[in-house]
Image (cartoon, rainbow, N blue to C red; front, top):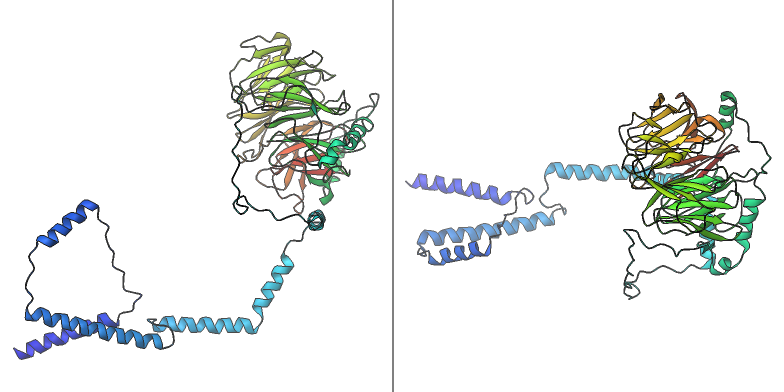
Length: 551
């Protein structure tokens, strides 16, 4: 009996030592359950109601043995902490730390860390000249440090309530608005100098009416002209802030003048190589919402028309230095196009599928007539035939319809021709610029299609279908293919799969040229447009920046 008792005591002693010497990293922390208030009160009642068992001699002996084990554990932990500063580590972990020290010593001996820092300094991108000039100007002016209202111990002023008119935000007051650049100082706004410069650039450099339009080139000559068009750092500028929605060239020949519109109602003007405004840019705010469409008048070189989602169409008249009120609606507008050669008549498209015929010669800012089309769908694009101005194409959700303005009805107007084959929404449909025998469409199903509209049949035949990725993010303008006004059978489109590329195609689907510049173009150029007379191409991105490719 004595031997068996001693053996059991020995076994117990071995197990206790093993638990004491176990590493602190391998021991799991005890989990404590969180009980609800009702369960906790029940547990307390059970604990108080249970009878306490009287302590015996064996229980006292067991408590004394637990105290001895705790004292021994404290002594062992104190010894481990004093030995090398790596308490509780295994031999493998100690060996690993030693290898790390040796590797770091070797790398420092060959000066590898210093070489990496020098390489970072060399490969760091250099600031452009324009960026350096802005930074130096800011330092010279002593721009104060910006502080938040919280640091200034100020409270945010209450936000004024905006008046709502049929779901639209408040508009600019009706009537003509003065041309006041918003990106210039107050003293410069009051002077007439920038307006005079604009008038000179619009009026004097515009081609005379008797000048012949540039003849169409052969395909070989056209391709060689495209290869000579390049962009540089001096041919780019941020014309508007935020998302750029639309852009257009002025048809002047001796200078490149461009106009853009953004999502905040801003109209920007940029003349390449000029010195007006900031970075040759002037910005105006004639609208309060998205400027969806913008176009220069070919008959009146001093007129620039802009359409906005706030329900207004305005004309920037540089001679008068005002933004005239052309058309005003209580519903949001989407697009417009000229219906006459003198650019006095317009067809204006609504979001809800209606079109309005507007004559600028009529006093007031109302329409001549308004019509509901055959399908009650959202209208996305309008294009007028270049020769037969009574025909206009309308891009709706899944179909392109061609109407005759002479036979429009108040409701459910009949179509002259239809362009089938699209499976998703169409955000671009344009007649060819010289004859109107082709219609170029861009659809969200990933295809660019070209239809034959020379005969105006009930169902226009499909000529070419080109696979091209047109899907973009919500913060970018939709990519759409547009014709080259100088070339009847060629068009340009941006690329969403490759950010720094702009492609030029023939109507047969053949790729003619790719504009690639990895150094200057680093984003998707959603908005593209060719100059009507010169070898020049503009491309705009989501940041409001324009790039110009020219010879």
